[in-house]
Length: 294
Image (cartoon, rainbow, N blue to C red; front, side, top):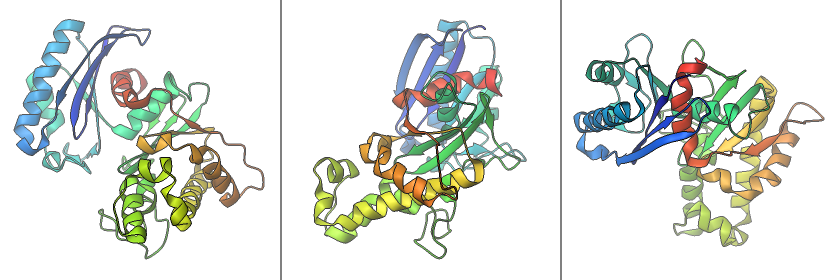
């Protein structure tokens, strides 16, 4: 396998990595996204960074790019991105035209799941459900080291599965979505409603602020458990691997697991729920692997 180039297009930064056939890092570079400057400026930053890395790594094959959202198969336009200026843009085609190489774009949760299933915490398992739990809530499904996308390219969109019919409003326009209960954004909003003041999830947990409002922690664990139990009942994956900022919350691996097992249809649940290995690098590693794991 020749060197592979992967790019992680995030809301804050754009990271590029070159790996060899042993998944060793040859070069890594970052630049700021500066999404307020708009589509054309972001596109040019990706092009400039890509050209630099193509030269360094002698890349002559496909480039993998991971980003929130996905390319709509029928139009070739990006949808569901949290970098709003990218929505409805032909970014994949624009990059291919500028770079003269095929560009493979993939949802960030799929890239996370692929990297963890290939060289990370879930590499010994066949069916992997990889969760990103942070500002938002998403997931990817990998089967035998291949991303499962589905005909609508929404496989793994766990964050917008209805947890409570007629529940909280979600930015997507629906109500009761998982993301509106267990994402970092939702948890911080709930804390402010309970306490009257803002605190980050990290502060709430590390400083045990929840002891003054125990229902916050109880709701978090119960909703996390219910949401994962639904996944286990439908997909029954070999492993669930957690990523994103909230994957560092230790109680998810004790009380959260117990809640998930309790809510599952099976009397005995053996599904491992584990922490990621690659951390913030999982997305860019997954992007570099797309070509070989389509």
